[in-house]
Image (cartoon, rainbow, N blue to C red):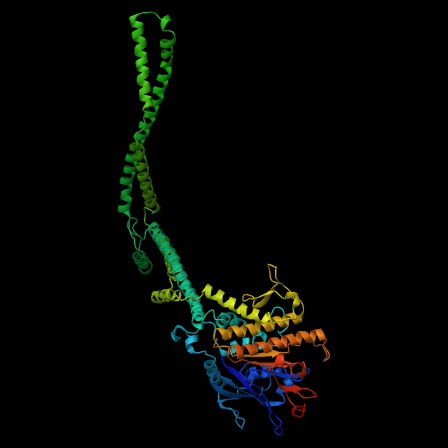
Length: 624
């Protein structure tokens, strides 16, 4: 997204003081250089404040001296000026001026902050279509998109430029809120998903959560209904036992049982006449006697059959020697017709017994089946007899009847107090299931696109990294951005795992530069429309300066390497990509480092805070 900062202007509380302006050029590395405590770092805080931050990061000494802050910039095709009154008593001012064109001559407020933010949201390409991809009737998703979240990608601040684990200064804006935003929009800015898909993903999680809640209510309702039905039937059984309901009353529906229970406790019914049920006892006892007699006969048959089989086996065993006599001692036996006839008869009997035994006769299956059936019928009759016997054959005394009635009434009232089923909105459930089905058709998590975009991002970062000459130990290393931990990782040649520590703060500063330049190069390549093509860099020289203004030749060479990388990036965007990009850098290093250097031809000095000069001129500081 095209963005050009033209001017930052300060109006002072001293009415006699002249306003101070700082001017910036497009497609340049605009540098403000100077020593410590000159107010350089507050430039980004002023820009953030004018872009309607709800936090105050501007140094208090500057706040006490400045009456209004203003910035004039181009966004898209519009030139806009925003002025904001200085904070008071630690509270951001609500007085703002917002209009197209340049600053007004008179200082006054002309717009509410909410209205101005709505305009900036639109300029950053954020509309209700993105906030409510499924229509306003569905409500906002948990993540409320704002243009301010995209400023995370526009500032390489002093607090993070040399750190090892932090690549986005969420603390500057509002840590928890912006960290949550970062996880939502990072894939968006690198081109993995458009906001429709991101919102669809969030909506799908919401829909699934709502469906689970309704389904849980349905399960709870089912359990509650089963428990209610069980308690109702147990109470009916007690009514029968106490004689308030006929023992043979056959009530299937819970509604019918409740109706009977209600009539008992409201009308105070007397015990019912169960004489008809008791008359059944004789018949039941007769049936049981007949069935037991039948079962005894069947059991006796089984006993006789088993005895018959045992007798056959004994006979076979007693005749077994006949075979031996006939086969082994035939020549020694008396040769007579009667003898042979007797032995043959015995052998014939043995064969007959063997044939009967070989048939493996089993007791008839129907006998066992009849026994089981009779046993089942006897159990049913016993249960019925036990149920009838629970009821006293004589009407209970009045006092006992009243006590029982009171017990039933209390149990009935407790039953009705049980939490009933919660109403289920089946229409809503059907709508949610249909919405879920439609959302699942959207390629919310297209892993192929994610892999491709991350590869392209890494390639852009790697292109910038390869331009550095001040990291000879990692010359052929591979750079990868870990989007899970939001850190850049360095993998040296011939190693399998990225380094946990790359050494000095200087090395980390270089990696931060490579990441931010590579990220913006990638966003230009994918035509990202939500992030301004602008970058604020706070002092790349931080690793090299300590308590004096002099650095060694080796450190200076590293710093110059960083400057050349920044210059080559802008040159590549402007000349090769025929696009636009602006960098605003505050630096401790003097102007001589870049002035007149052909390799830093895109550097432009905005101002030099030296010899007592600073963001707020000395004469304009408010006296305490």
